[in-house]
Image 1 (tube, protein in one colour):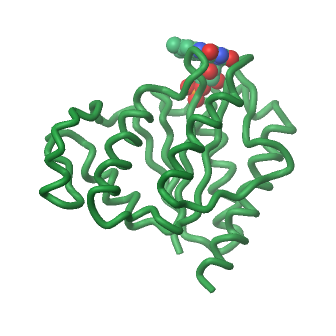
Image 2 (cartoon, rainbow, N blue to C red; image 1 turned 120 degrees about the vertical axis):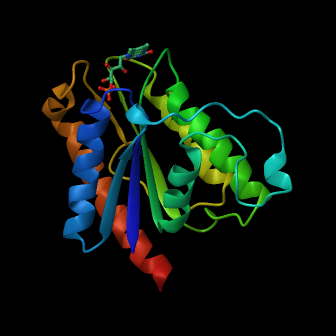
Length: 189
Ligand SMILES: Cc1cc2nc3c(=O)[nH]c(=O)nc-3n(C[C@H](O)[C@H](O)[C@H](O)COP(=O)(O)O)c2cc1C
């Protein structure tokens, strides 16, 4: 079983990266296969609402980096998306991916249904709960199953790497990853 973690931060090794690595390390310890992907070097543009995905199933007609990312998402048994808070929201990089992945999945084979997954969010100061909720909407409308932790999976930090000093945030993410591993094993039956 594989878990894919996707960072929606434009920073290659920012705070989102550190939180996702923490989660993936725990998942690997729990015996799961892991994959990490960052959108910082990907060209994933917003949805054009062309609805070509309604005819050409499981495909997006835009020629950018979307399809390889979507294919990796579809192949994974579990999905984590991480985002910094930008003006109270997830990054446009991540939302462009999720809008298109959601529509292509919905018009096609519903690749996310009944898979497990969770968002993880980081901010300097505020907007974490809104952004976590914003991302949860994707998981829920896709029919996914979302584990919890000892707190909402949010953490604080400003400059790259600062988040590792947020002990509670790091611990919350580690427990979240343990719960995700537990859930995936249960779902695999
Ligand atoms: C354009 C922009 C908008 C931001 N908006 C917020 C915000 O609304 N609330 C907040 O607490 N931090 C905000 N921040 C700070 C980032 O969320 C914070 O630095 C975070 O740790 C960055 O994560 P990263 O290193 O993974 O990119 C903003 C940063 C940028 C660049």
